[in-house]
Length: 485
Image (cartoon, rainbow, N blue to C red; front, side, top):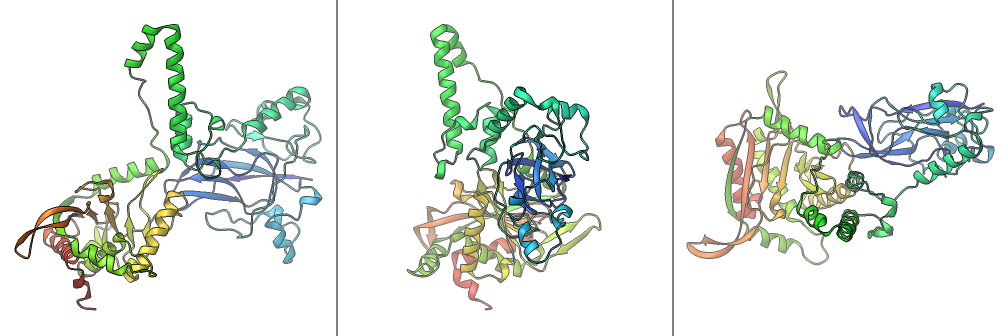
């Protein structure tokens, strides 16, 4: 006899209290194995796949894609023991049986529901079990009005499980079959990765199933959605022009209306962090221009054929860690509860990365102990992972100092907001050819503006100025890094 188990959104750590459903990875009626990911969610930190600790047949999904779900709210219900004999040994749960695990392990569940914690075996082979008009198990706690409607109050999709209960007459017959077909068609997955693309489609009431993706394997990109929205608007204006040319001209001149973007997920988390930083940190900024010609020459000399490529950001990171070794006051944080400055022993260097999902700050662990080649490889890996939306919580948290290369946007200077609860951020502008006095003569040199925004509670202007001056000197003369080695 099947037992229906409810799986709720687990505690994802780092004080997170809710998550947004990005994509369902299973459908109602599918067989899932223990620790198989069932849904991809977006938290304030990253996108993660959530594994289910129960093996069986999915009887309901709670929440549509784009819905915000609090920790502890139900995600899916699974009928344990309703899997046919020919599917009982498939998926990760089968490995446990081969190793001598008890037969009721699937019913008990693994309990491995935290992010990054669970079996590493491949996901189970999914097979659709047609509902056949049956309903949930007698032990399932669902109100009568939800059963009658075929859906719960959270918008969960429901399906019967063979053997779970004997009858559900209210949902059988022609009407029930039509509803099942409609639900099956509506749950079809579209080739979308970016939550931004889904949000744009929702805000403009655009059905992504009607959009042809221009990305790899038909992936729908932001440009595809924008083009579809623009085309629909043009068609609407053209239709209005046929019926009423004057009205169309007036409508074209009028604004299309305001756009409201919810401050949720990573966007909301960033907004809260910026606001908190400005509220709590008495920040100050100092800046200096530096001749980066020799630094660029050093990078060219390092990038010889056949050797691993060294990025400019990696060289700046190496200079930054050397400066923090001389001025450890800036690699610290302020404990407001105990009113203490906490100087940190290791440099976990964050760097700003712009993605389709917004600004994220991946963290390079123990940057002070890495070589330039190692730093370059880690920056490349984290940047690519950030653009794919696959950064873990560990890769986005616990930074101690941030390096912000806003020169990639073609700007010279900035006064950035400190990445709370850190104490400082080094900003790097674009490197541009400018007139510069070099060796007593006017010459065209590659000049960059460096800025340091720091928490005035951890140090005074003398320390901040000394740090920034050391960084500028190393940019102008990279050989200074050899001193003391």
